Length: 121
Image (cartoon, rainbow, N blue to C red; front, top):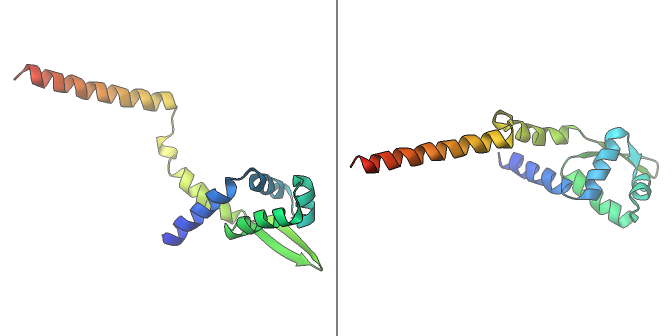
């Protein structure tokens, strides 16, 4: 469980940055070389390498070297843990208004019950 928890934290941390989200989006469309990503993101090679390292640590990228060129692709399996974590809350989804209204109604019922009990003493 500790590994899954760390992996989930690494994934969310990696995706907290707009450049890394853009890289993930770009690689979801098709693989690219590191230099292509740097050019498209308008980042220096050292900067793109830092982002790639974080994404690799989060297991969101696959790398394959061909000659001197490193190609990257999205590793969709790295997103599965995050997807599972989000999916567990699906049962609670409704509209925010419904959830809030139900909560307020529950509080008001409890308050009414307490008031009635105090009056009957």
